[in-house]
Length: 220
Image 1: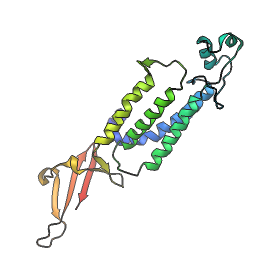
Image 2 (image 1 turned 45 degrees about the horizontal axis):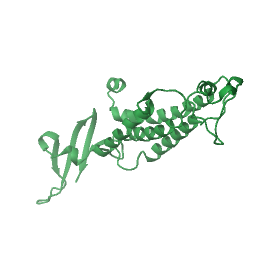
Image 3 (image 1 turned 30 degrees about the vertical axis):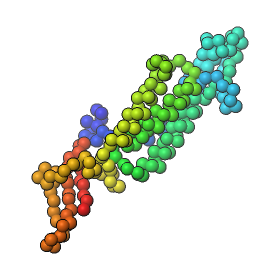
Image 4 (image 1 turned 90 degrees about the vertical axis):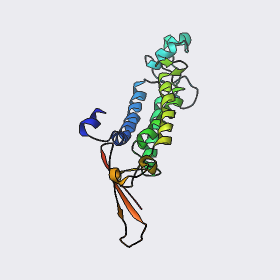
């Protein structure tokens, strides 16, 4: 918000442009978490389970919770879900999907951001089920799940109620619902598309100021 205000940039367009970098950053960050041994998963018998060394966060977590019993003192560590890989893979798929669909469907300022919020919150909620490290709770949810429960319906509401659309060239246009009843003395001017007498076809050009961006709407 501070950056948007300082450079006079549209907030939601700026948020849209930041999403690919954020998603790519999380992909790399979770690879680092895997190598570091943090953000670990619960114990699993699946063949892709990851076994960490004695002294790691997984070893300590299993020892203090009694999952390895006395063998834990001898360095026993059980395999855990690679939740870091799960999230990294999910972020990569989300990033690919966002890039592939950026110019498809009904585009509006903030669409990429809120679509990312919807997909990330949904995937994070599921991944949290397999997390085994202490990370705080809110009622029956982990902290991240609680935030996800808020973000998912919020993103759906934004998609359902948004009326602003973007033209193929990236400029902002407004839907009929947002413009309401056109008044030539306040929103712009109306000029005949043809000067032939009796021609009822008009071209309406609206020059508006919307979210700090010049908006021009043309239709016949």
